Length: 161
Image (cartoon, rainbow, N blue to C red; front, side, top):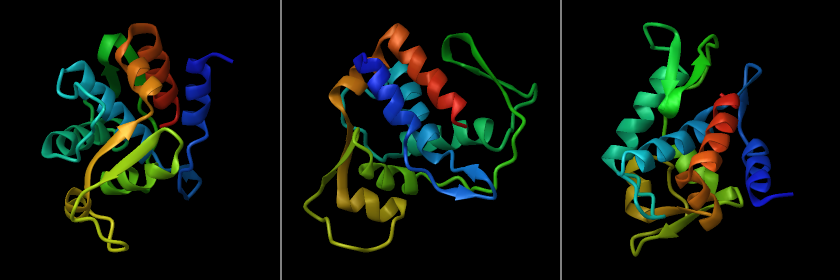
């Protein structure tokens, strides 16, 4: 199995909450958000901070991919991929949950800050205070930056929504 296929399998096996028969789209949307910001030159190293820019892009993609707020009903993802929007999800837009809970996936690690404390609530404010950044598996991060690998990862994530 190639490293790309191993990572695609990891992504497809992500642990995701289920509500009303739907798997939560939060983790795939967060990873797509990271890829969008990488392509825009906003994320240039493997330190993903839970900043305003990440939160704003997550909300933008959530509205399009999950809430279906697109006039034509088709979302044009970077480089021309199309996704028909036909589902209605029972989930709310919340970047804190996937940012935090993805640490249980093999490819995501949170770097604690000096202000980190055990326990507490999972919300944007406490995550910004308790963690400096998240880090992807180095190989996955590099694959998200390159053409064919990036598009295979994007297609896999879109298929999960």
